[in-house]
Length: 241
Image 1: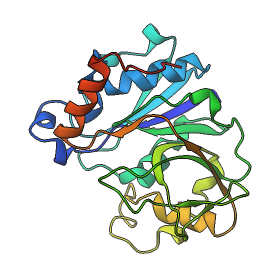
Image 2: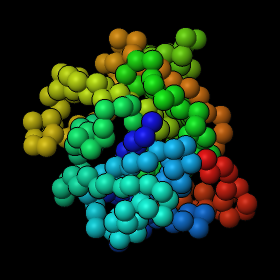
Image 3: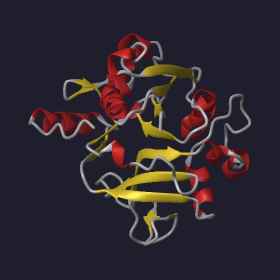
Protein backbone atom coordinates (compact mmCIF):
# COMPACT_ATOMS: atom_id res chain seq x y z
CA UNK A 1 0.00 0.00 0.00
CA UNK A 2 1.43 3.30 -1.05
CA UNK A 3 -1.57 5.52 -0.27
CA UNK A 4 -3.44 6.43 2.90
CA UNK A 5 -6.34 8.64 3.90
CA UNK A 6 -6.60 10.35 7.28
CA UNK A 7 -10.03 11.58 8.34
CA UNK A 8 -9.42 15.00 9.87
CA UNK A 9 -12.47 17.06 8.94
CA UNK A 10 -14.57 16.70 12.08
CA UNK A 11 -15.72 19.64 14.16
CA UNK A 12 -14.53 18.11 17.44
CA UNK A 13 -17.62 19.34 19.26
CA UNK A 14 -17.15 17.07 22.29
CA UNK A 15 -13.59 18.36 22.67
CA UNK A 16 -14.56 22.00 23.12
CA UNK A 17 -13.13 24.37 24.18
CA UNK A 18 -9.87 22.75 23.04
CA UNK A 19 -11.07 22.48 19.43
CA UNK A 20 -12.36 26.03 19.15
CA UNK A 21 -8.88 27.10 18.01
CA UNK A 22 -7.22 23.79 17.10
CA UNK A 23 -8.54 20.88 15.00
CA UNK A 24 -8.73 17.72 17.09
CA UNK A 25 -6.08 15.77 15.08
CA UNK A 26 -3.60 18.59 15.74
CA UNK A 27 -4.03 18.51 19.51
CA UNK A 28 -0.71 17.49 21.09
CA UNK A 29 -0.28 14.28 23.05
CA UNK A 30 2.96 12.60 24.00
CA UNK A 31 4.93 15.55 22.65
CA UNK A 32 3.42 15.76 19.16
CA UNK A 33 0.05 16.22 17.43
CA UNK A 34 -2.20 13.16 17.31
CA UNK A 35 -2.02 13.04 13.54
CA UNK A 36 1.78 12.95 13.56
CA UNK A 37 1.69 9.59 15.33
CA UNK A 38 -0.18 8.31 12.25
CA UNK A 39 2.17 9.94 9.77
CA UNK A 40 5.18 8.36 11.44
CA UNK A 41 3.59 4.92 11.41
CA UNK A 42 2.54 5.23 7.78
CA UNK A 43 6.00 6.32 6.69
CA UNK A 44 7.54 3.41 8.63
CA UNK A 45 5.61 0.81 6.59
CA UNK A 46 6.43 2.37 3.23
CA UNK A 47 3.39 4.53 2.56
CA UNK A 48 4.50 7.41 0.36
CA UNK A 49 1.35 9.41 -0.28
CA UNK A 50 -1.17 10.59 2.32
CA UNK A 51 -4.44 12.43 1.72
CA UNK A 52 -5.79 14.39 4.67
CA UNK A 53 -9.38 15.50 4.43
CA UNK A 54 -10.09 18.80 6.13
CA UNK A 55 -12.92 21.17 7.01
CA UNK A 56 -12.85 22.72 10.50
CA UNK A 57 -9.90 25.15 10.76
CA UNK A 58 -8.56 23.54 7.58
CA UNK A 59 -5.75 26.05 7.08
CA UNK A 60 -3.95 24.86 10.19
CA UNK A 61 -3.10 21.48 8.70
CA UNK A 62 -0.73 22.63 5.93
CA UNK A 63 0.73 25.17 8.36
CA UNK A 64 1.55 22.41 10.85
CA UNK A 65 2.37 19.51 8.53
CA UNK A 66 3.51 21.11 5.29
CA UNK A 67 3.96 18.82 2.32
CA UNK A 68 4.95 15.83 4.44
CA UNK A 69 8.56 15.78 3.32
CA UNK A 70 9.91 15.79 6.90
CA UNK A 71 8.48 12.25 7.22
CA UNK A 72 9.39 11.17 3.71
CA UNK A 73 5.74 11.51 2.67
CA UNK A 74 3.81 13.50 0.13
CA UNK A 75 0.71 15.03 1.70
CA UNK A 76 -2.30 16.26 -0.24
CA UNK A 77 -5.22 18.02 1.39
CA UNK A 78 -8.82 17.32 0.37
CA UNK A 79 -10.94 20.23 1.57
CA UNK A 80 -14.57 19.30 2.17
CA UNK A 81 -15.99 22.78 2.63
CA UNK A 82 -17.29 24.38 5.80
CA UNK A 83 -19.51 21.39 6.62
CA UNK A 84 -17.73 18.02 7.00
CA UNK A 85 -18.91 15.27 4.66
CA UNK A 86 -18.87 12.44 7.25
CA UNK A 87 -16.63 9.41 6.76
CA UNK A 88 -18.32 8.05 3.64
CA UNK A 89 -18.62 11.39 1.91
CA UNK A 90 -15.08 12.26 2.95
CA UNK A 91 -13.71 9.05 1.46
CA UNK A 92 -15.66 9.60 -1.75
CA UNK A 93 -14.43 13.19 -1.96
CA UNK A 94 -10.81 12.07 -1.52
CA UNK A 95 -11.01 9.06 -3.85
CA UNK A 96 -9.67 10.86 -6.97
CA UNK A 97 -6.44 11.51 -5.04
CA UNK A 98 -5.96 7.97 -3.76
CA UNK A 99 -4.75 6.05 -6.77
CA UNK A 100 -5.96 2.65 -7.93
CA UNK A 101 -4.48 0.34 -5.27
CA UNK A 102 -6.08 -0.47 -1.90
CA UNK A 103 -5.45 2.25 0.66
CA UNK A 104 -5.33 2.63 4.42
CA UNK A 105 -7.94 4.88 6.00
CA UNK A 106 -7.64 6.01 9.60
CA UNK A 107 -9.48 8.36 11.90
CA UNK A 108 -7.32 11.33 12.79
CA UNK A 109 -8.54 11.41 16.39
CA UNK A 110 -7.44 7.98 17.62
CA UNK A 111 -4.20 6.77 19.16
CA UNK A 112 -2.99 3.17 19.08
CA UNK A 113 0.14 1.11 19.49
CA UNK A 114 -1.03 -1.20 16.68
CA UNK A 115 1.65 -2.12 14.15
CA UNK A 116 0.37 -0.86 10.80
CA UNK A 117 2.59 -3.44 9.09
CA UNK A 118 0.10 -6.06 10.24
CA UNK A 119 -2.61 -4.68 7.96
CA UNK A 120 -3.15 -6.67 4.75
CA UNK A 121 -1.90 -5.01 1.58
CA UNK A 122 -4.77 -6.63 -0.34
CA UNK A 123 -8.08 -7.20 1.48
CA UNK A 124 -9.70 -10.52 0.62
CA UNK A 125 -12.91 -8.68 -0.08
CA UNK A 126 -13.64 -4.97 -0.27
CA UNK A 127 -12.34 -3.93 3.15
CA UNK A 128 -10.43 -5.13 6.20
CA UNK A 129 -11.06 -3.49 9.58
CA UNK A 130 -9.02 -3.52 12.76
CA UNK A 131 -11.18 -4.20 15.81
CA UNK A 132 -10.44 -3.57 19.48
CA UNK A 133 -11.99 -4.57 22.80
CA UNK A 134 -14.96 -2.41 23.71
CA UNK A 135 -14.02 0.70 25.70
CA UNK A 136 -16.08 1.85 28.65
CA UNK A 137 -17.77 4.56 26.61
CA UNK A 138 -18.85 2.07 23.90
CA UNK A 139 -19.63 -1.15 25.79
CA UNK A 140 -21.84 -2.81 23.18
CA UNK A 141 -19.32 -2.71 20.34
CA UNK A 142 -19.95 -2.53 16.60
CA UNK A 143 -19.31 -5.78 14.74
CA UNK A 144 -18.71 -9.48 15.34
CA UNK A 145 -15.60 -11.24 14.03
CA UNK A 146 -16.43 -14.84 13.07
CA UNK A 147 -14.17 -17.87 12.96
CA UNK A 148 -13.42 -17.31 9.27
CA UNK A 149 -12.25 -13.75 9.89
CA UNK A 150 -15.38 -12.21 8.37
CA UNK A 151 -17.18 -9.32 10.02
CA UNK A 152 -20.87 -9.58 10.87
CA UNK A 153 -23.31 -6.88 11.89
CA UNK A 154 -25.09 -9.25 14.28
CA UNK A 155 -23.87 -11.41 17.13
CA UNK A 156 -23.32 -11.29 20.85
CA UNK A 157 -19.53 -10.98 21.17
CA UNK A 158 -19.18 -7.66 19.39
CA UNK A 159 -15.95 -5.69 19.21
CA UNK A 160 -15.38 -2.00 18.46
CA UNK A 161 -14.17 -0.73 15.11
CA UNK A 162 -10.88 1.03 15.78
CA UNK A 163 -11.20 3.58 12.99
CA UNK A 164 -8.34 1.91 11.10
CA UNK A 165 -8.87 -0.17 7.98
CA UNK A 166 -7.84 -1.01 4.43
CA UNK A 167 -10.22 -0.43 1.53
CA UNK A 168 -10.43 -1.12 -2.16
CA UNK A 169 -11.71 1.66 -4.39
CA UNK A 170 -14.57 -0.61 -5.37
CA UNK A 171 -15.86 -0.44 -1.80
CA UNK A 172 -17.57 2.83 -2.76
CA UNK A 173 -19.24 1.41 -5.87
CA UNK A 174 -22.98 1.64 -5.37
CA UNK A 175 -22.58 3.88 -2.33
CA UNK A 176 -25.88 5.63 -3.05
CA UNK A 177 -27.91 2.44 -2.76
CA UNK A 178 -26.15 1.45 0.46
CA UNK A 179 -26.42 4.91 2.02
CA UNK A 180 -30.11 5.12 1.20
CA UNK A 181 -31.93 8.43 1.53
CA UNK A 182 -30.21 9.75 4.62
CA UNK A 183 -29.86 13.50 4.95
CA UNK A 184 -26.95 14.72 2.87
CA UNK A 185 -26.83 11.98 0.23
CA UNK A 186 -28.40 14.29 -2.37
CA UNK A 187 -26.09 17.18 -1.57
CA UNK A 188 -23.18 18.16 -3.81
CA UNK A 189 -20.74 16.88 -2.72
CA UNK A 190 -22.72 14.15 -0.91
CA UNK A 191 -22.50 13.67 2.85
CA UNK A 192 -22.95 10.18 4.34
CA UNK A 193 -21.42 7.73 6.80
CA UNK A 194 -19.34 4.63 6.04
CA UNK A 195 -21.30 2.32 8.34
CA UNK A 196 -24.22 1.59 5.96
CA UNK A 197 -21.71 0.72 3.22
CA UNK A 198 -19.81 -1.56 5.59
CA UNK A 199 -23.00 -3.34 6.61
CA UNK A 200 -24.01 -3.83 2.99
CA UNK A 201 -20.58 -5.30 2.17
CA UNK A 202 -20.68 -7.51 5.27
CA UNK A 203 -23.96 -8.96 4.03
CA UNK A 204 -22.06 -10.11 0.93
CA UNK A 205 -19.16 -11.58 2.96
CA UNK A 206 -16.81 -8.91 1.62
CA UNK A 207 -15.43 -7.42 4.84
CA UNK A 208 -12.74 -9.16 6.88
CA UNK A 209 -11.25 -8.10 10.19
CA UNK A 210 -8.58 -8.70 12.78
CA UNK A 211 -8.40 -7.99 16.49
CA UNK A 212 -5.86 -5.72 18.12
CA UNK A 213 -5.37 -6.60 21.77
CA UNK A 214 -2.97 -3.77 22.53
CA UNK A 215 -3.59 -0.15 23.36
CA UNK A 216 -6.12 2.07 21.63
CA UNK A 217 -7.84 5.32 22.54
CA UNK A 218 -10.64 7.18 20.84
CA UNK A 219 -9.59 10.69 21.85
CA UNK A 220 -13.13 12.03 21.84
CA UNK A 221 -13.23 14.11 25.01
CA UNK A 222 -10.83 16.30 27.01
CA UNK A 223 -10.83 13.67 29.76
CA UNK A 224 -9.68 10.92 27.37
CA UNK A 225 -7.01 13.22 25.97
CA UNK A 226 -5.79 13.96 29.49
CA UNK A 227 -5.74 10.25 30.34
CA UNK A 228 -3.77 9.39 27.22
CA UNK A 229 -1.31 12.19 27.92
CA UNK A 230 -0.75 10.82 31.42
CA UNK A 231 -0.08 7.34 30.00
CA UNK A 232 2.35 8.54 27.36
CA UNK A 233 4.01 10.91 29.77
CA UNK A 234 4.63 7.98 32.07
CA UNK A 235 6.78 6.30 29.47
CA UNK A 236 4.04 4.37 27.70
CA UNK A 237 4.61 5.78 24.21
CA UNK A 238 4.21 2.36 22.62
CA UNK A 239 5.43 1.46 19.17
CA UNK A 240 5.97 3.97 16.39
CA UNK A 241 5.88 1.51 13.50
